[in-house]
Length: 140
Image (cartoon, rainbow, N blue to C red; front, side, top):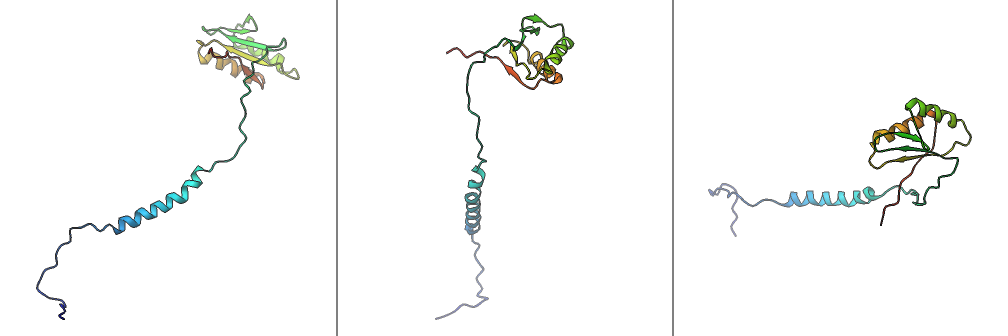
């Protein structure tokens, strides 16, 4: 039994293989981290979501219907409005009524959003707190 201790005259050979032990250690740590964080990431706050009633809106005699045509002309029921101040004056008169009449906006499908947005902003400015939008059911 011979034992070679130091200074044997032979040079150490260069090892060209990659040591994969650190790679495996890092991958196992990442796997554990993902397994711990995935249940936390998928947990959501439980809330009661509203249900879609999808009931057609009934236009009652006391309701105010504001309509916007494709060219941006606004109407109060069937009477054309002369401008922002005309609409604001009319809305301020009905905003003080308790309970407020229901405001329904009918916007033409080709009308610019700006025209409908101005109606909504004017309703807000006058103190109207409830606005409905009238739409058509899609044709099946």
